Amino acid sequence: MKKLLIANRGEIAVRIIRAAKEMGIATVAVTSEADRDSNAARYADEAVVIGPAPAGLSYLNHDAVLAAAAQTDADAVHPGYGFLSENAAFARKVQEAGLIWVGPNPDSIDLMGDKARARRAAIEAGVPVLAGTDGVLDVSGDIEALADEIGYPLVVKASAGGGGRGIRRINSREEVRGTVEVAQAEALAAFNSSDVYFERFVTHARHVEVQVFGDGESWVHLGDRDCSMQRRQQKVIEEAPAPGLPDDLREQMRQTSVELARQTAYTGAGTVEFLYDPARQEIAFIEMNTRLQVEHPISEAITGIDLVREQLRIAAGERLGYTQEDIRLDGHAFEFRINAEDPDNNFMPSPGLIETLDLSGGPGVRADFGFSAGQTVVPFYDSLLGKLVVWDTDRERALARAARALDETLIEGIKSTVPLMRRLIALEEFRSASHHTTTIESASGL
Image 1 (spheres, rainbow, N blue to C red):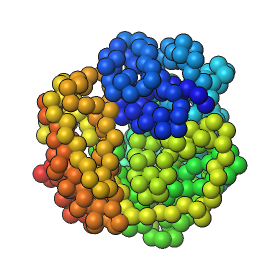
Image 2: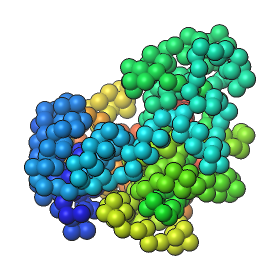
Image 3: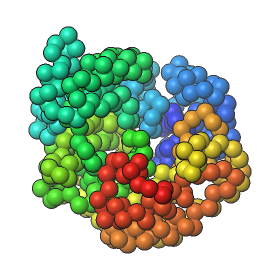
Image 4: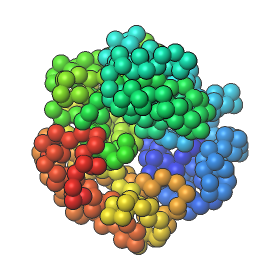
C-alpha cells in the first residue's frame, strides 16, 4: 500500500490521514465543493474535489470516488464510517478496479447488512439472541399469532436497516398488521427492501458491544463498550469497558463475538452489538457493523492498539501478529460526541462560522476533530464536529477527568452539545451506571 484515498470527510478523514502518514503511506482526500478548505484537504498530501455539496453527488458517488483514485494513482481506499463504508457494491467496484479495499470482504458486508441473515449467522455461532422470527417475516401468514408467541411489546425491524433506523414498536395484537405495513413502507423507501422481522422489545435496555478484529485466519476481541447514552437511538456518549456487566455475561459476549467473526471468516475491524437486559440479566445480539465505529478511540484507549493502523496493515496483506493473551485491557475511557447542534432548542443544527474552538488537553485527553477555528460548518452533512475522549485508571477517575476536559472545551460562533455533555455526566443514573437507552428522553431538566 503506497497511496491511500480516504472516501470520507470530517474527523474520521483526519483520523485516517494521520494514521497513514505515520505509516509512510501517501494520502488523498476527496472532498465536495463545500469541503474544499477542510482540515482533511489541508492535511492530506493531495485533495480532489469530486462534486457539489450534496453527498449523493460527491461522497456517495461511486464513479467520482473511483475516478479520483485513478487520477491520483491511489492503490487503496479507506471508507471510514457512514457514507460508503458498508456498501458492498462499492467495495466490489474498488476491488474490480484493482485497488485495496480497507474493510471486510464484500460478502461479509452483504451478510451482516441483512439483519435477518445476520441473526441466523449469530445463532449458528452460539451468540445469544432475543426471541423473534427466524429470518424474514412472512407477511402472508398469521403474523398476529407469531407476535402473540413472542410477547408484547416487540419491535418490527427492517432487515436492511441500521443506525437506529427502520424500527417500529408494537404494543398489542391490534397494532401488529398496521405497524408492519408502515415498517415495510419505510424500509422500502429507506433501504430499497421491504423485508422486516420481529424481535422482543427490551424495556430500559443497555446497548453494549464488542470490538473484534481479524485477518481471515486469526481473530481477537479488544474488549467491550457501552453505548447506552443515546438520543432517539443515536449514540451520544460511549465508554469502555461497559460498566456493571456480570462477569459471565461479559465473557460470553466477548467470546461469542469472536466466534461469529471466525465462522464468517471476517477480515479487519468489526463490532458486534448487543442489548443487555438488566432485569433479566440477559444479553442478546442486535447486529454486526462491518466497519470502523465512531467510538473506536475508547477501545484504543484501553488497549493501546491503533485500530486504523491495524486496518491498514491487514488490508495490505499482513497477519494479525498477536493473540488474545497478548491484549491487555487497562483503565476506563469515555467518548463524547460533540455536534454542531443546540441542545436547548430541540437539537436544531447550528451551521456557521466557528469563531473559537479551544479544545482540552492534558494527560489522558484526546480530541479528534475535523474542524478548526475560522472554518465554517456547512449544513449538508452530519453535524458531528468531533469527539472528546478521556482515559484514566478507573471509571470514577475518568469521570472526574471528563468533567475537567468538558469544562475546558470552548466553542463559540455556533452552538454545540458541550453544555449537554456537562449535564449528562452529572446525572445520578449515569454516574451509577444505571442509565439505559431512553435515559435522555426520560430525564428532566436537560
